[in-house]
Length: 265
Length: 314
Image 1 (cartoon, rainbow over the protein chains, first blue to last red):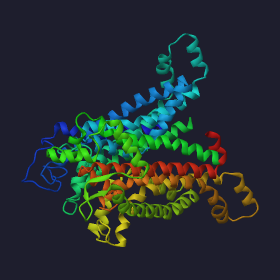
Image 2: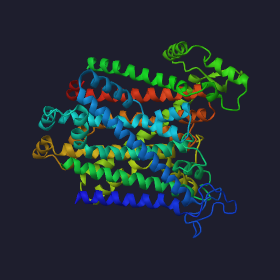
Image 3: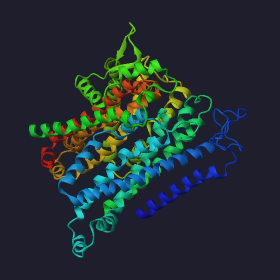
Image 4: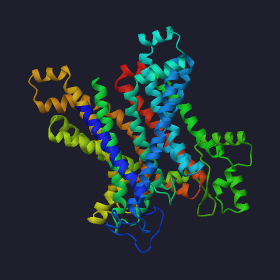
């Protein structure tokens, strides 16, 4: 029953995102093409969500912005899962001084607010697409490292690992074949956090003007530019704002449901 | 207890050292001349030389690092590249921060007060009606509150209260009511987190034997909840509030910029946009220090409240 709900949510989210992101491929408009004859139009048949202050089609821009969000979210998530789990499992598996060192490093990262590190990175190193992704990857792996370490410590001495060791299976192979599959669910929950966190952080950085730069489309840029025209065209902020909220909300609900399932087991 | 505090202080030092070093080295790891990066493409050769001198970038990197750390130990963040005093001399970053800091502190404190004012009754109400519609709607609000980013919530608040109903000023810090919207938009996330936590904590406590004892002795339901349960349920909240100070301080970066609230957050983003490298670095360091300090205090408080768990763990 519960699992069905989680599955339904995941499918709904996927459909929502696919339709939104897919629109950019069939849209008759270009997301950067300026049309000064059609400024700040209300939603109509020609422009389903209206136009912005430069006459650009909002739905097309939204679609590109969602693509940006999805790319940033997926990349940061994939990187963090891979790096975090490998570091965490490795640290727990080796134990001793290696483990102690890794834990000190993660302590330091945990004590530092991630978004501030991203702001510092964008501010001091430079902004743009690549910087945003690097900045977000810098701290997102820590949760996975801690989690996989804790899980590995728990199952490290279970009989099936011991028998694999006795059968002469190599250390790396044990990590990939035996440890990682055992911690899958909890990793998925954390992945959801990192995914939505990265999407929010990218939008936030772009909103502050130190993330992805115009004329590229990002939910943050759309919100920032929309704020200047709030009085005449409130849909300029409502469209990207509610889209971002819907994505984050659905991911959070999904991970909530998943956490319940994990807790029950 | 003292042992634990000393240990935590010793753990805090490498963290602060790391934070400081990162902010120092970030500018040096980028390819090319850091002066070009700071000054921008339009700067003249003289401007570049001036920046190079004022940031000590003409000295070897080990010496720069040494100067940087020595200054930091004296709470000296250097001089702003562009802001000047009335007599034309360069303004100290620490002075600029000191001017803005009270505003950020007020905003954060008001946000915490607002969140306590709403979350405590909401949590009690939800816990008392566990499983009923009211409980479910409060929990739904919590998920919404956790999910909504401040830079989505704030424009919606402005749209509703400033433009639609024209009740509150859009931004700035001109009158006492200016603080309402920024503080509320900062508090929503906090309300969601604390309500959920306090509700869970109350329900945990209700299941404990001491509640049965009190009930058996003839204590009324209200008295059990307010006198016995709430006192115990509130304990973990104190730690969370300290932890949330860190989150609040980073949250102010967004909120202050949306509402043009003259605090550290606006100073940080303004100086990033003006390429005032020294001021930006000072703000980042300060926010990071506050965050680390808040986490440290949260640890100490939770150890004080529940010595068993924490002292054993370390």
